[in-house]
Image (cartoon, rainbow over all chains, first blue to last red):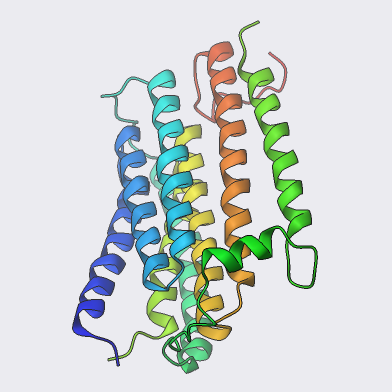
Length: 173
Length: 103
């Protein structure tokens, strides 16, 4: 049994996710699409907080909302006029997209409703189950079973390659 | 009323389908990238939800999401660098006009 407050919070967040993600792909002004994407990412961070993953919510806000959306806004301002709205879409293309996404929605919702309604409500975490910073740090920097030093190092090399690649690709010749 | 897993999975499914729709219909490369981010975000959310509801106390799904966020950031940065470079060469980022590999 959940408290009334968490149910209200859930309804607000779910509505925000649905409304803003629909708006992000249907609006014709590209800068507004980036803003709606930002709101969707914030709502996702709230979902992470609701599910007791505080660190993940903080990472979501810092990396996605703080980094990627700013990058998007700069790229949009560099490549298009801010007030310019894109031309109306060809109806054949819209029909194709609607068919693909609605088919995906139907199939996945069917399988979710037939399989995943069996899951119970989220079990309360006991104190030793709670995901705190201590556990996360040990898991990222350990080499034992279920620990992630190798992916962590691979990510750091990937980020370095990405920095160099970004500079080389975008630099003026 | 209990908040079951399905209550969280349905918004994320709708987010994914919006991303799919946007990726097919949009012509602007940055708008396509925004749709891609929506899809990635929905998948990240699913990892976390299944982790929390099926295996509470473990953090495999959380770690997957953490690494997926890092890779998405790298991918977006590189894609935007490419888009800006393409814009500098052809003054346009409409995918219908970009049909030559060699300018």
